[in-house]
Each structure stands twice: as C-alpha cells, then as structure tokens.
Image 1 (cartoon, helix red, strand yellow):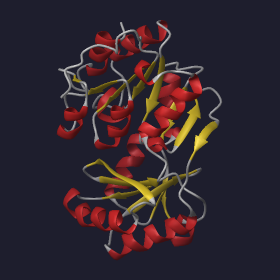
Image 2 (cartoon, helix red, strand yellow; image 1 turned 45 degrees about the horizontal axis):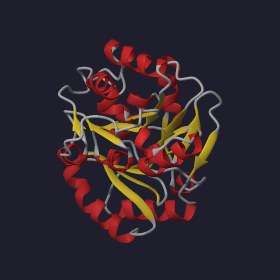
Image 3 (tube, rainbow, N blue to C red; image 1 turned 30 degrees about the vertical axis):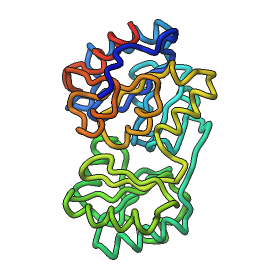
Image 4 (tube, rainbow, N blue to C red; image 1 turned 180 degrees about the vertical axis):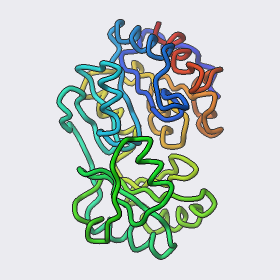
Length: 275
C-alpha cells in the first residue's frame, strides 16, 4: 500500500467519487448520519460528490434525491453511463450490441448459467433465480424473465452472470477467452460477474467526467471496496479503500480506512482528505 496520506501537494480535492454498496451504504442499504454529515460538509466546501456504482441510474436516483446532490453527475453501470443528476440526461454512454447480447446468452446457456441485463423496464433475466430476486430487492427495480429475443431487444449497458462464486469461475474464464478485446469484464462481487462495453469502466468514466468539468486528476478522490472499483482507484489522484474491501483493492489504494462501510468509513476518509 502506498504511504501517501494527503491530497497531492498544491491541489485540493474538487471531486469525490463514491462507490455505493459496501462503501457508502450500510448493511441496511442506507446512508448513516455520520456519512451524511461528512458528505454535506464536503459539498459545502465546493466538492462535487459523484455516486460511481455498478447500479443502474434508476437504482441510484433515490440516493441522489435523498442526499440532495443537485447540479452534479453520477456514474452508473460500472462506467457505462454518465448521467446528469437534475435532468437524468445521459451525457455519455456505451452499450453492448444486440448481436453481442445474443452471443452472451448462448455462452451462458451452455454453462447452465443465470444471466441478467438492464433496460427501461428494469431487470431482464433468463430465468427465475435468487440472485436476480436479491438484486431487485436491493435496487428496487422490477424484474422479469425474458426469452432470447427479449434479451436482445435493445442495446444494453451490461450483462451480469449471477450465481454461486465457485460455479462462476469456469464461466468467467470462458467469457474472458471468448470476448477478449471486445468487452470489459470484472467480478464486481463474488456472486456477480459483469460484462460491459470495452470502453466502460469506472476509471475511464471518472476521467471523462473530470475532463468535462475541468478538474485535474490530482483533484479527484475515489473511495471503493471491490474489484470493479479498481479502475477509478488507480486513476484518481487520491484513492481510498474501505477496511472491509477486497485484499487486492486495499493493496492498490493510497490509504485504507480503519472503519468499515457499516461504521462511517467514508466519513473517516472525507475528514482526512477534504475537511
């Protein structure tokens, strides 16, 4: 782990990029009073707070409203979309083509694997399974079982293989072989293997957004816990991993919190690097 403990010399933090699940959110999927106060204090200092999540825009907007993040942006679907908080308008996006979705469907089916994707009507899955049901419960998005043509009905921001972590290992290996150089693929959680457009990544999206806002890399703080946060943690001028984060993520961060996501770890990082 890097020993850097402060923002790069001569630069103050102007943009704070925050992962949601297991970072900002507690075990009840809420924002603690301590984290809430810290975010308000950061915003009062002129810092743009950006939710950067694997969740869809529809699943992030309730938190945008709850935290009163007006006038800003969010990064959704692991960097596949940059969205204006106030209007909900996409300022940038990347999508998988229907042909690619058909290939993904066929490959997942060959492994007997559950898979799902996202669209205007919520979550579309190839079968009823507990992981999709849990995703629906957590995000508040409706879900439905669709056939292959329904899955391919429109370009999608990402596809998720959901299942027992051990069962996902061979699926992940085959997908990475088949789609090498054609997609960005990451295990966001032990039970979620995500396939996204090649140009979609939290780090790439964060770099795009900072450029749009005229903010330097050295003026960006990113906080995360999982493998899908690696891109933004490597790109940001200051990177913080949660104490409860994956070991590989903690190793690449500049600093690791002493508190976890259920104990105001985000507030701890904000106090050190912003306030």
